[in-house]
Image (cartoon, rainbow, N blue to C red; front, top):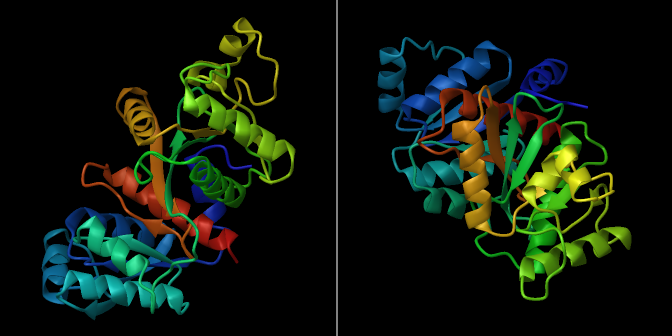
Amino acid sequence: MIRNFDDVFARIKELPKKKVAVAAAEDEPVLEAIHHCRARGIADAVLVGDEEKIRAIAKGLDIDLSGLEIRNEKEPAKAALICAELVSTGQADMMMKGMIDTKNFLRAVLNKEVGLRTGALITHVGVFDVKGYDRLLFITDAAFTMYPTLEQKKSILENAVQLAHALGNENPKVAPICAVEVVNPDMPATLDAQALTQMNQAGEIKGCTVYGPLAFDNAIDAEAARHKKIDHPVAGHADIFLMANIEAGNGVFKAITYTSSGERHGGILMGAAAPVIVTSRADSFEAKVNSIALAALAAQGGK
């Protein structure tokens, strides 16, 4: 099982190299990440965007573009459609956002003719390698689904499980996170957590072990779980943290990012026909590289 990002990069070297289609690739941080990924054998790329700007940025960064496919398209929305078609026709394995707003980028992902829609809910999965933990931690959904219904939570959970499987975790432990670890009719998230646990026990949610409601402390820390007398394999050992809503998810995601010493993270969108990379402008260079690496493994997992 892959337990950290060092394992992620080691595993990638054993697999056929994947190709990422970058929409509106005239973006300095993205070009830096792509250059690094090519140099390390993580992934190859096709750059779709304003070729003149792409080459000017590359020259300023001393990046060699020789051998790299570039498709000239100055209109970002059209560049995103080209990328979606490249992925949907098998000419690329994953799709990445460059200098284009998220709305137009996702319109291309969901385009009925050339896009990557499957009918499933598209959700964000953040993956953290935090010093002191013997496993990767999956936080979902911290970016896309605002106030998920029970059915949407099931989809969010299943998307995260699919990524965990691609990273070698055959039976990830899933904790639906709430403010408390007991069912309270006045707290809808606890009712959803109970329902998801029951769905897992009934075989409606497969490939994982779900147990909740759990508060974050007794989901991540075994001593906290023992103190609360919670005896279950998920308690204190969760891999996937299913957040109640975007506010809780986003808060936890950023708290870990900015306060955990030595943490490494990345994130991708799951639920489309191929992995989709939508990094924030605030994401570090390393986070962009990690996200491409996660997408490469997710793409291999679908083959």
